[in-house]
Length: 143
Image 1 (cartoon, helix red, strand yellow):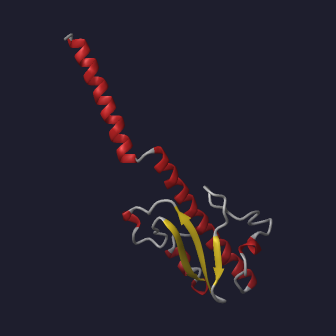
Image 2 (image 1 turned 45 degrees about the vertical axis):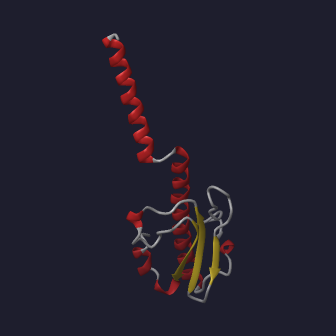
Image 3 (image 1 turned 180 degrees about the horizontal axis):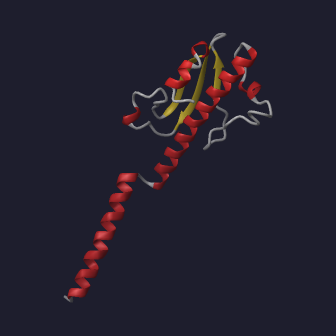
């Protein structure tokens, strides 16, 4: 066998192994897409928490529905699930407490387990106490 052919074959094998290792480490493109959707969902929920806090400060109460946040100035439309375009779930539990829910595609990485926004795959709800804001905003990773 020609040494040039052997070198070419070995080079091709190394490239193939590197590509496969990269895909294995990074996940498939479809899995990466689902991960990006989940990151967007978390960012949307954080944004809703900020808007709910602003609403409560200005109105001394939580809204009955998220649609009340749309004022045309600060918020022109509500965020939607990036994959399904469904609305996020909001439920007012009391005058100071509420729940936000989203449906996640993948579980959050184990490295985020201690984070407030940690989630498993599927529907996840977060209970928040508006009376504890804005101190809680800092703990939630919100400015």
